[in-house]
Length: 441
Figure: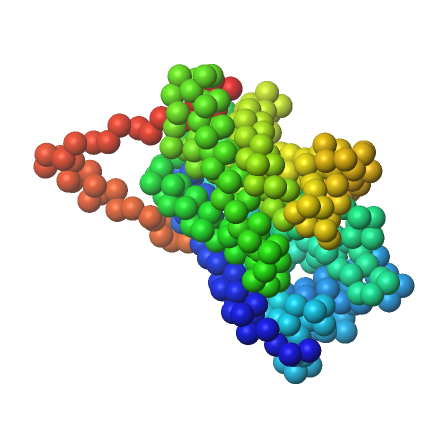
């Protein structure tokens, strides 16, 4: 098939946008961390790019989007390992006119950020070397199979969730529920940070958080609209819905904060925007723009409450990966079963509120449950093995001193210079107000 130069140009741009999301995530997570661990937090994102990027080229793409023979419903094969021969593959063969290597690179960026998302749950306390081993193992044993279940098809063969008819346009199950369930398993293995929840562990740099949220939102247009694999109608509706849902969720979150806590915060609007982006990801090409606003309002409000569950249930999810990504992903995936309409995308299906009955909602529930159970279970086993063999958690003295200094021999800020400046007449900044729902528990 002849290469579609316009579609290919959009896919190259989308790939670059999605890759930018991981450095954006590093700023988002880094700002939410304490000053003594910000470099480690950002390093966990950047090393995910390095490790997952190499593994994807060697075998990840092949196992995710290859034919696994009799095992095809659950996993691909090694036919395309090392991408050998794909240099000559003019297009993906699916009628998009996009070279296959462009699709390879686009999907690599999804695998990268999914792994990086998990890191926010274990801020301040994970050994860097153990995280590197975990990133490689998790991508191989968790991300690759679930992505194959949901997204792979070839003629009359497909991953079992794809074959079931579950819809996930850009990664609600594959990326967000998957990462959120894994984050929950990982924090249960590593345990709480020392001093949590009694000791305040406030974000050290809220401007970083806002910068990171902006970069994530910018990249998310490639994440969602790029998943159309071309510059057409599906990309257009995904683009608009990505805008609409994030706006609605950011607004809903700060309204909840104002009514509950008496103040709308910068951390709140940044978190709400991300929650809306998470929720609209699986639904972005299956719902109307008004549906996307409704979805965003629900996701923003629900996630604003969900981030407080860790205090009631006692799990230390440092940067709210569970409350935003797992919960937001579940909201988005299930609301497809209510709001999806074939008037937007005839490749989808109609939901309960658009004349389709309960069928699609049931399929979405199966996909959500399968992702939660598989990701949590396998992640827990991986983390336990790494903890037994390597030790996953830094020791108490290193945690108290700060993981930046002990793991990387660096610090983000020269506090000696800062203190000297304060002594010569500068005014010390007041501590940042923590997210009030966290402070109240």
